[in-house]
Image 1 (cartoon, helix red, strand yellow):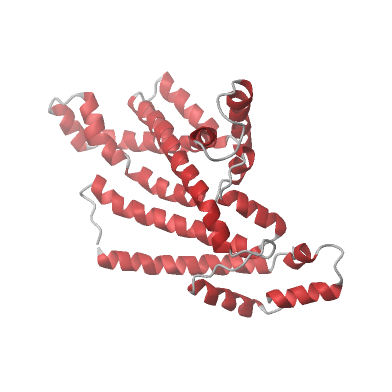
Image 2 (cartoon, one colour):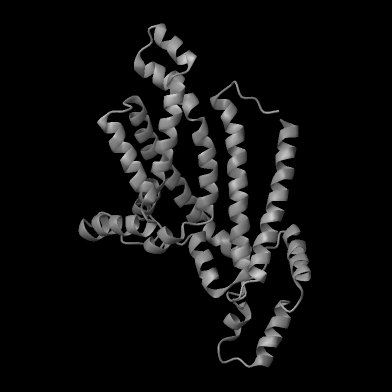
Length: 306
């Protein structure tokens, strides 16, 4: 266990280093100039040059990246060019909203997607199976803004059940979480269906049936715990995606998460914030996968961490 953890931590550190290098390099060669965003259109060339020198953006790539890495090792994500605030402070202020939306969105995805996949697998080849798989295809293909606006129109504008946007109460959370649940449920439904079909053919499932166990007991006790293993890995990936921010959903519902912060930074070419959000997203993906690795043995005792 200890050796596995140390190995994964070392691998994670290399991944984060690679992510930071690639992202920093892409932002370095980007045609957009953050100094122009800061100085404004009417700034003189001398003013632009002074700001560039103050921020250290006149230095070569190696020098800039080395300075960023030194700060990163000290826990410093940098300072926003435009908001004049530490990036860690800005991200920390948005983190509770992102975590809340992430948790609610994943729960909605699992409830909708696993139920669809389970029903489709148990009635494979029938009308309900084809209908659910077609529905899952539609949810996977649907643009985020379309689903967001449809839910907002029907449940907030027409019916008035939920607020149009904002953050702070459970009612504000329902529509954005449901949107994420609908959009992501198709992936879980398809994965659960294929996994359940494979598990239901296994020898231990046939043995359980031969012993006279009820269908519900065979499915819930023997099939589902094994079929759900690939789902755990998908949850780990979703954690990273959601922590990176669902920009469109957050924008439509006015949700003050990390995605909204990242979108504002991209529009303004605020490099420190873009770097900070990217690294937080990468850390979330790594932590999600680590968590999935350590939860899997508790679901399937045959799996051992070495």
